[in-house]
Length: 116
Image 1: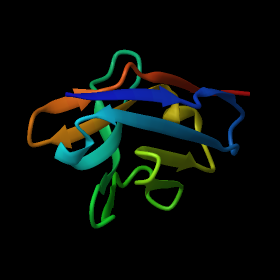
Image 2: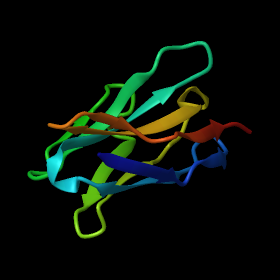
Image 3: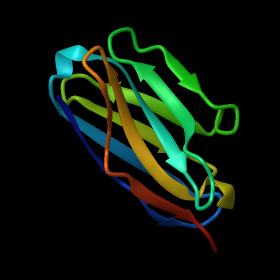
Image 4: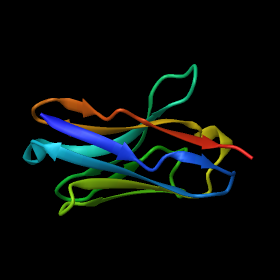
């Protein structure tokens, strides 16, 4: 199994920045890709960004490309999501995801609120 713990959410004004962290533990060896998804009230969960665990290839939703950056620190088993130029429509609960050959795992979620 893989356990995921997110941190870094909060309240920020439009145009501001936040960095989310996701620390993984357990069967790290089994992870193929780690990513971030988000779910706003009344909406379905949507893909935000992902990074391959070995090669570091990155993928972004069109709505965040150029504003968000996903990165990883394999030594710390941690994935980061740097979010810049935040907009009110980025408000959501952000979930960390680990896709492994064992299963698909989710963190508990962290709230990001963009409001003045």
